[in-house]
Image 1: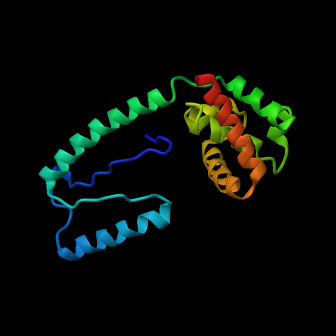
Image 2 (image 1 turned 90 degrees about the vertical axis):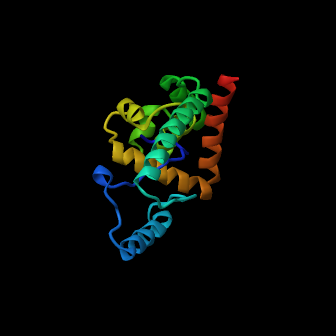
Length: 174
């Protein structure tokens, strides 16, 4: 399960409560791999604990409770989806370009920006957005979201467009 800007509890444990590490060298190799995660995958590693199977089981139960709390917090933060047609209408008004035209224009970031806002602020799951745009595949949509996150840091027009769509959503929810 992926939640935009979510925090995840990842638990590593052996099958049938077996030990994961046979030797101290195994444990050091694991810690080396763990240290590469932030740079390799662009994630933040806030904490980790190495413990036995009983400790892992207690952590897993707590993580399951935390996920329930996160889901409730997300529901409260996104009290229902913004209508897709409404989001597209806002995008057309902001850009002055018809949605269908924006979809076929090479180099136009409008589609990716709308997908980004729909997922980050509109309460949509990426798979739902992909189902709304003919010809868009899930991997391409995910890559588009990454491109938009990077682009908005260097393109004021893109950032302004995203902020305006976000503000429209916030106004609607007030």
